[in-house]
Length: 561
Image 1: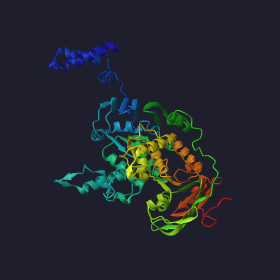
Image 2: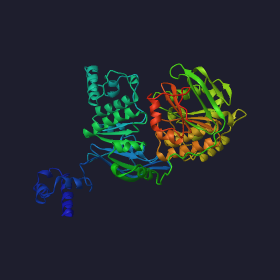
Image 3: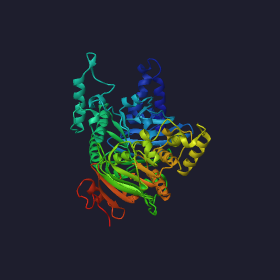
Image 4: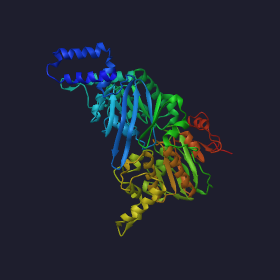
């Protein structure tokens, strides 16, 4: 029956191309036979229309056998992915697994080499981002794409401003923008400027902009990486509202603990290949890690016991104009000192003061017992202090330069010979560091912008190792990188302290703070609220000090016995 129906359909389809054939008796006979005599449903006809592909109205998006190659790299190898209407489908994988490439193909930023994409059962071939937006696909990148000096309304309608009598209809634009904000239950005026909003509110503006484009699919790339717990819950509330409206969400995150709260299904990619799709309720965190890395990670925080040495750094009562107030602490050789606190507590500001980026207006800094003056980043480098910034792409790397150029950028004097750079020596040193840190790159000439987040972090680390720093400040070193790469970064940190170096670890992830820190400093309102030793530090105790629920009991610090 099916074969017969297919043959009849093929004849019917050919007759469509013959002029005036639709008025013939043969044409109408075939049409009746397809729709009536054989009682074939329209869905069956559509099956043959789509080349034998079974349609399913349940799916908003289907990506089939998607393949994409870059020079020397097969980024995607016949990957399959689908999304239901009103679903949060989590996309997981280590950095370099192919998640971003797959999503860039879906939103029109990259062309696919082969495979098919269907939206609402219609095959699409996007040649640019506008095509995808017109089809209802929006993406919210980890680095928010908003213009800070413009209003919310201007950001929402940028490039698509309503026009009346040849000029922008400001009244209509503000009113329409306000409707989107009200729909998301945001108590903000559409006339507010982006620069006056918090990170969480800016995330919501990105969502509002997506809704203004009538998006039926929103891709969220690491949406909680810069949010507090309260702000995360606000984002989740918005996502649940979007689900109720039938909007599909593709959610990319490395925070596995979030997935059970917000996700419905999860798909895992590894090395550019599709691994598995599961219901979130049917998998554990360990299951997901095993699917992502292809092995069990028995110890996510490979902390090693190191004999703590003499005091290397001592800070006494330093203050800055805008944030820090009378901060004091010490750091010893072989020690990892973790800095914890809520967003805005002053952790990054403390790091910036120590590297001379923000001027110290009072207080003193000592290295190996000698008082030093740090008035610029150059002073910090001379005193062997290195800083691995929170935003490695903006402040830690030159994305357009190669791996070896980035590694040697901070110490060019070391590879100069008679005033000329010794390029051979540069390659040799870079190769040694790339090998020792296990940086995954096709070659030393590869531009760092093409490396995964974890490997970019390793290149920043290599840069400071090249300059022979003794004190390394890691500011949110594992933000935006996968669990496997996190473990590699932790192992590098452990190896550094074994060599007698000292590390200040700034992290918003309490498990990371507790898993890697020898001591924990808790900051709040630009002050050090507490000092906790490893044996007595707990998540509850850190949070109590961070929010001011308890106060310190000795010299401004809670001291362990």
